[in-house]
Image (cartoon, rainbow, N blue to C red; front, side, top):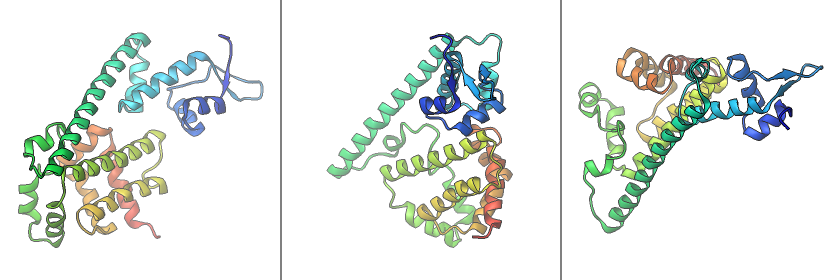
Length: 255
């Protein structure tokens, strides 16, 4: 059995990773099939499957493909040690999710009982996420604008559950953009433009009417304001520029 090989289609089915993504992993030096058939088809070994599993573990933990390649190409890389480290990271995430579940349960109980939670209670497990972080500065810069007034009107009604839903949506959008970046999809590709348009529509739904032109202004701010840039760079290296470029391309395209 140790000499068994698998076609790219079989590996895609086993791993739930698209054939295109497997090809991309080979292009970027993450997963090279053990050999090719006489007709040129990729053939993956059991060792290749173990490598792919390792890549996917890192992906689930939020590592970029560049970081994964750097880690796994290190001569000192040890698969068992890497698995132990990954297990620790996942265990920490599980604890965080348990804390979130507990907080949601307490929030539901408070809402049903008519009890007002304190701000500290509402945001205790969210770490850096605080929707009011720049409230004073935003009010000073845009307090007289209709967009700010509409945003303030809407967000004043939001509950902890609403903010959780907004945060989840944001993370889904960011994950979709990161996946496109990792695939090497250009920022002006329709898929990238569709992804950032989801971000625009999220603003439109949650805060204020956001046209593509207005979104283009926000996109430019993502790279002009170091704080916005740092937020995206923390998610994925180069993401602030990619978001800006995709937003500008989306603003310029014709429906």
